[in-house]
Length: 209
Image (cartoon, rainbow, N blue to C red; front, top):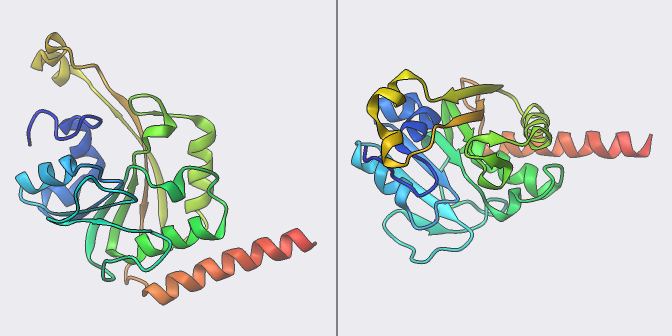
């Protein structure tokens, strides 16, 4: 992988974000793909990568413009990992029907035991340092879906110092990574939507109590 496959994500952090899916040259979806730099970088190391965004400078070559809360243009169980870097639907509170539907649609695109990984630029006060309130909001949001939610840390260590990249102006990174591993066997898209229905019905009942 090149030194930096995106203006926002150095390659060493990207490798940690997508983890085993990159090592096994799996299928990865970049959500909030922008100009497609990350998609192209993942392809350079042998992954099958696609991207989606609200608006695109230029669609094509595996990059599509679309909405996560509508009819997502990807089949179920297509990806080993999904990297979420930002879409309009996730820019505000994570408690509304549209947000839950968007997450359900993404989770339905994962293969059994696949991972949804969050790297939200607007939620990071310094590169990789997520705001505590936003972190708790994501944890609460994801915990309502079947699967395992994990919070992990990435930090540059001795290898970064020995590489002398800091002499070339690269900054040391400390990142909080939020991920969700879906169950195996995988749920269908309809089953994920039923989960959303149950979540929203539960909220409605609690609100009426």
